[in-house]
Length: 354
Picture 1 (cartoon, rainbow, N blue to C red):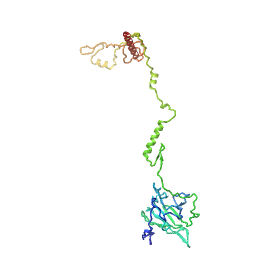
Picture 2: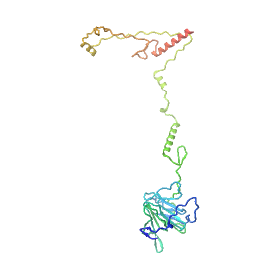
Picture 3: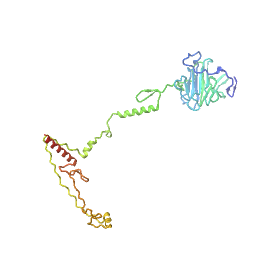
Picture 4: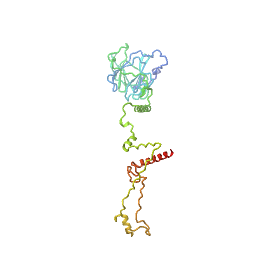
């Protein structure tokens, strides 16, 4: 197989990626990983310093990508959270037929780079060779690339060193105590608990907001504790009775109750009328028209010389009369006196009937 600018020219179906193994189908011989494989992070701009080793032994296939696995996914994933890494960037899988690990670029935008291990005097050196090969062009899936011990794979800003030991024992460089890079398995749907304690598999923002409002309203309605003064009931009728007083109780009317005599009050006398002064506007206008004080008005002088007298009604209150003034006698307001007249009329009617 010839290479030109780092890309294979000859196509061979045997190099195709076999694809994920179905859960329903029984695994055939050679599909389970029996080889030791660990990735040691040589350099990375996104992985924490405490994460150095990714243990891939026991997985027939592992993906590399920017996002978490989708719900229901069965293939584990090493997550590299940076924009240079595609959602599903590359895949490492165990080729049971060839008994080797292989790397496939899944059509990433920025590519997956592979550097073979440098061999000096028949021994592999930890430092890779100067040649750095991109597996495939942008947005084009690559053919499987076999991995060897101490090969280097670069995805985004992260460079991994491949460790494959035939004795399946880790070396000092790939031994892990607490520095493992997490391999994310299947992500289950997020189980959210609402205010009432029930579980919701799918979180709906609008529904969650409605449930929150309903719960807060219920807490406000059934809140326990002392009621503040601003929330207490105000008896407005009692306040009016305190300010203006209450009506007197009705007198008891027996079968022979006598009617109370109505005391007529003296008719009030109004003040004597006074003449209009000459400074009055109406007085000056009439004087200019030929009217003289002491004369009547009208074309033939048929007007009144004396003003109309005010006739006072003692049974009804008019304008300017105080509510506490005694207009009909007997004391009290005119409303109370009217009630007493009504009681007296009822009493006299009852006596006649008896």
